[in-house]
Image 1 (cartoon, rainbow, N blue to C red):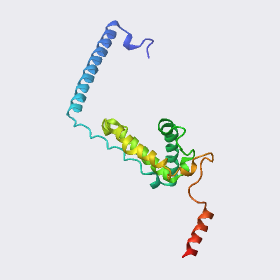
Image 2: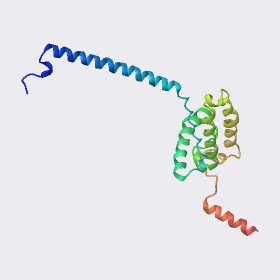
Image 3: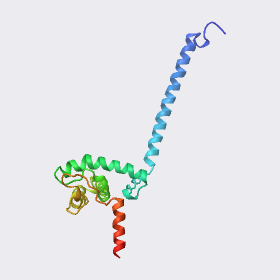
Length: 182
């Protein structure tokens, strides 16, 4: 090996090398432009993509597995306590503070939330979606839950939440009484 690099040995060789590199850069630039044009042509000729199918709606809460039910109930509690109660229910309504203990309330509130998810999206449901949610879903649901014979009826007053269903022992005694009366 010589003490100097052969490529830099003469000024003519260096100039020739620079010219060669410039030509290679121009060729690469032309290739980039050609490929961009081809890509644009392919994109323009490609048919529009099929819209992705919308995710299927969540199943009704009582049709879920035990683990899915727990997760959905936690999300429902956040929605009801964080949105529905502060905005629509108020303090003096007779709302049960442990509403999730009433199975009827859980089912109805989950259905309300599913309807809200669908109808609050005006792009999908139209401009009247929110009005339909209020009139067709929210108002009847609140009337039922807060009715004198509704699921929260025994929870009014100073006692707070009272389980509506009889305790298992009481239920067994009631069943025995019914059998004895026959």
